[in-house]
Length: 181
Image 1: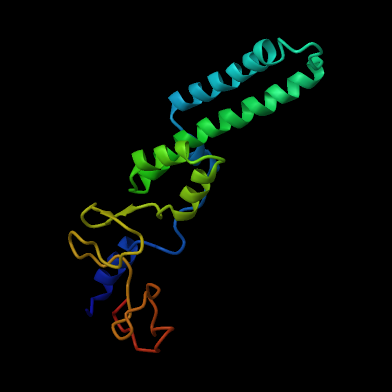
Image 2 (image 1 turned 90 degrees about the vertical axis):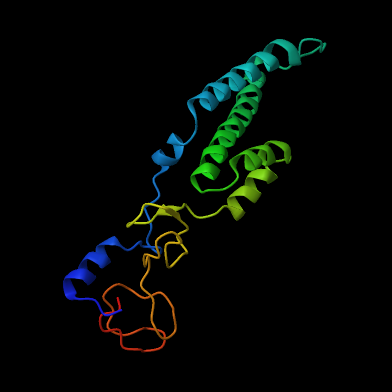
């Protein structure tokens, strides 16, 4: 796999970087939540306010004062509204990661006490990328594109571990890498 300097330079620019990835941007994560789920979350919040103010304490002989009802309604509304936002996030995030998004949406809804969310965040797959050569969807752990065999991450020819682009020697087995990376 000895490549001329110009070809290896092009190859260096086209390889995927599995370790650094993209930086986490909370705004991009918030944009994943569908607009419809934001509307649902707001309606759930407002519904909890109405429910707790108008219905919950109506038949009690000595209802709590409004100063107590306001924080109770706010916390309950925020909790349920946040859960609705998380349902939308899990749906879109699972789709983005190439997971079964319908299954995960149902699981987070049906498993009680937010355990479904915890399970999702523990077992979710890495965000899939695309092959720089053919554009096929590839897992970031793949060394080669399954569609066109493009080398996504340079590997040592002796120990087959991923190496850095431009390395002269393999840091694991000390094999010489002239023209390999």
